[in-house]
Image 1 (cartoon, rainbow, N blue to C red):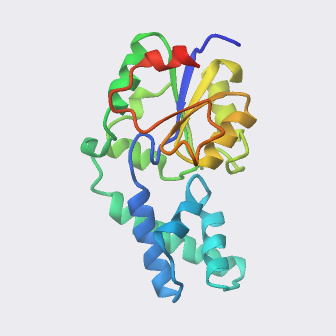
Image 2: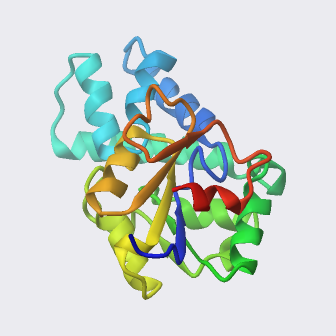
Image 3: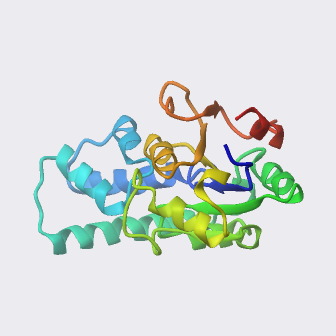
Amino acid sequence: MEKIKGCIFDLDGVIVDTAKYHFLAWKRLADELNIDFTEEDNERFKGVSRMKCLDILLEIGNIQLDSNEKHYLAEKKNNWYLEYISKINKSDILPGTLDFINRAKKSGLKIGLGSASKNTMAILRGIDLVSEFDSIVDGNRVSKAKPDPEVFLLCAKDMGLTPQSCVVFEDAYAGILAAKNANMLAIGIGSASILKKADKVIPSFDGITIDILNSL
C-alpha cells in the first residue's frame, strides 16, 4: 500500500451539514406535488445528483414528467435550497473538522474536496474555506454521479497524486463505493452499519486526530 499523501473530503455531512436544508427544499417540492416525503426517504438522496434525487422523488409519488418539467422542478428546488443556505457561516462547520484539516495540512498532506453538489463554491465561500483546498471538484466539473469514481479520480489528478495514495472521507454509502471504485482508502463519517464498505468508520471528526490515518 502506498503512503497516504492526500485527504479528499465530501462536503455535505462531512465538512458542513446542509442535509437539513436539502430536506426542507425537497419536502417543500414534495408537498407542492402532493407526495408524501419522509426523512427516511431523504436518506436515499445522500451523495446522489440533483436530477437523480428528483427521479427518486417522482418515483415515490408515482409521477411521470418530461425532461423540461423535470429541469424546471429541479431548478425550483435548488433556488429554495440556495435561499436556505444563504446565511450559512463558519459556525456551521461540523465539530473537529477544521482542526483535522489544519493538522493534515501541517503534516504535509494535500487537501482536496470532491462533492456532487453544484452549490459547492457558494457553501465554501459562506464558511470561508475555499483557500483551504488544493483541489475542489464539484458537480459542475463532473458528469457521473457517485458511486462512479470520477469526482475522486479528478481530485487526485488535480493534486498530482495517485488514487492509491489518497484517503476519502464520506458520509454516504454511494460515496464510500465511489472511493473504493477509485482504489482509494475510505473513512466513513456516521454509522458503521450503513457505511460497512469503508476501511474505518468514525461518528464525527470531534476529537479525531490525523493519527487515525496510521491505523489504515
